[in-house]
Length: 196
Image (tube, rainbow, N blue to C red; front, side):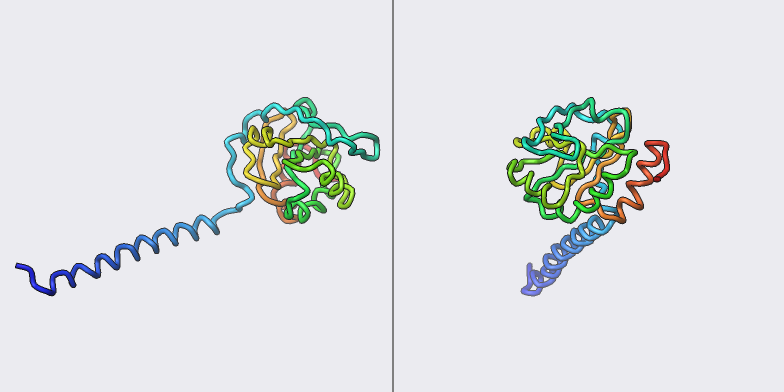
């Protein structure tokens, strides 16, 4: 026989159990949010050959030595290459751009830009305003090449060893600190040459 107090005894369990589940999920969320460097999201491609790429140049884009070429797989071999995925509509790309301008002066690396789902006029205007750090700019208007490379969003930067394998992937804008603490030691190791 049930008494009026029986349902009352079970009620705390129905209140405590959802609260305990919520707190466990919140703790997991905060641990994942603050654990490690979010710019170093693991990629299934790290350690593997970079996907084949053959992107047309950004029409009308010229540098100091003439028209800027598109991107091909053959270009990305022979020295350390950085493939930077960017777009004119990307606000973090503006934040990252001065860092790329500095990297473009490093003779140990080839810096190329994969222009992602952008309007050509806007991309040219962006580079005209902020500077041209890239030795080559390939247009990925459909986003197909970005999918092949496992791009989550822009900006992202892939570091390729001289043999064309992907050594590292950075998600989000490169900062001076990331370049100093993570990218430069990696470039030194891959190129076998210290910074000048």
